[in-house]
Length: 251
Image (cartoon, rainbow, N blue to C red):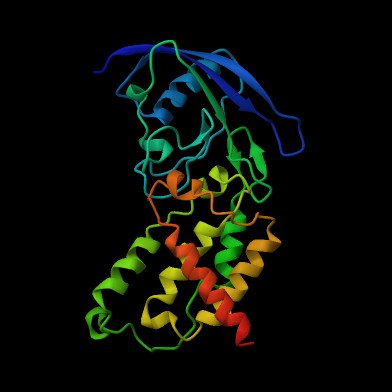
């Protein structure tokens, strides 16, 4: 068991997308510092339920930093103060006793609030559906090692594939840009031989859909890279920009 701390939470409460939200203050007392941030919210919600108060709505699933479901701004930082960490893997030992913690949802036009800390991230799904697939008919699945891939490209593709689509890059960007997310998906497929045939149409469709969803433009602030729990490099954005330019020039 860790130490016990008391913290004050200022949580964004918004009952539905059309309602006007506001910050509500709650006391979280006798919180074990070995608890994760979401476990702390579980304790707060249990106490709210006992008092007949609507619990705080927040997204979660695996709670192992894998699925990309969780996410919120903690004191203005996506996923909280630690680098390379999802909200579910952030622990209360990183907060001081009697500290004030402000919790709010991702702030972006492309991520409309559903309720409290829950936002609609289906825009990412639509971007993926627009071009993030491979339609080449290859028959039955070939042996994985039968297609030679240079080690450098394989590692870059795996780095891009690490993106969990949590949306922290959008939330951290002052322009609410989704460039890092889209670039990671474009790089993932482009760098592998199976994705080469459709690379031009893929990047054009995905960027077009990204713009339709209302995300902003990249202005090289690098906040996305700093907030990404998987520490995906902005170098993928440069690669996507090159691929997009080549695709447009070849039209």
